[in-house]
Image 1 (tube, rainbow, N blue to C red):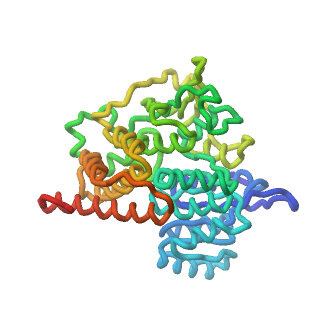
Image 2: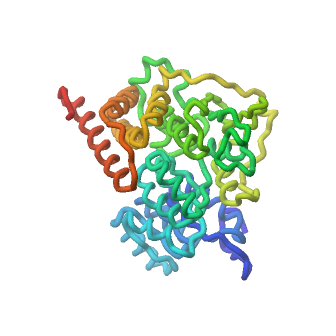
Image 3: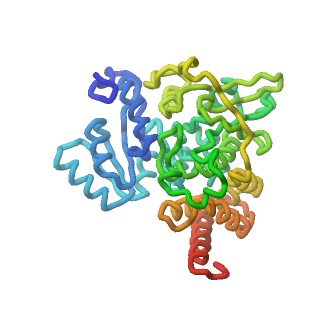
Length: 414
């Protein structure tokens, strides 16, 4: 059997994790299935979910033969169902956003890979935590938008939360095995969050106004979707990761420091009070953190090649320039503003990035739009998911009005 086939079945009586992959056709979803296919005795794909890429999801259904497939886009779901019937595959197709929540809460499910990009991933990811599942979190927006709700659900419902972002997974691997959420008790001084600096680390600032979407999406080290690639170019991705790190590891903002490391070999570090610094190193390949989380607490084969230190030769580090990357400052300010701050930050960023990708907003104007939205969003406590989603809706509307006002020359977007 080759590494991309799951034709071999687990032995009868073996304990097999039943997995739901949300965002199955994206880069993280594809990498997850690549790891899963290497361990048919350990994992079985219970369900696959995507937005609208029917052909890609159909191919995955052929290979993994899940019990369910879901598509958020109902037209795409109808087409997938037709093709599955034609081919006689044993997969039932569900449609709509509510189907994702239904899938992750099914009693047969053990683990959920949450890899849907953006706010759309929040409801099913939170539902998985509330159902007590093992949640492999690749959707940073879920934690950024509903951090306390999400962490409380994990703690009270007996769920297990394992970060998939290479940086947070590296931090987890560098913390003590018995870490209980108390950094001081574990002797931790600070968390060092590494960042590649993206494609514009050396670009003259005056040139950023002319950046194209294709240039912004050409990450030097990682292969990612377009939205997250733009976030990496602005370093909003790292700003969101600072917020995530604070929530995941119960850290203050001033305990998380961003370090630019262009080679992307060290994925993050933890400094201890005795001066020791523990780092996790590896190739920039998402299969490493995915395999770590899937097999946790065991180590399993990921398919990633060994790191050759003689090829690397040098590792460089530098402080981020906040004039080049103002989104880092905005993320820190949003975290300090309370629960509404990260929600507003994320919503404004999603609108700004979408407009940039459509050619409606210059690259260098993304931070300015986000900052204006933050100044217009009052600090409020958010106690439940409907409140989070309502604020998200209001902020998106505000951001869209601000962009429209600028394009028409209007003075105000109120």
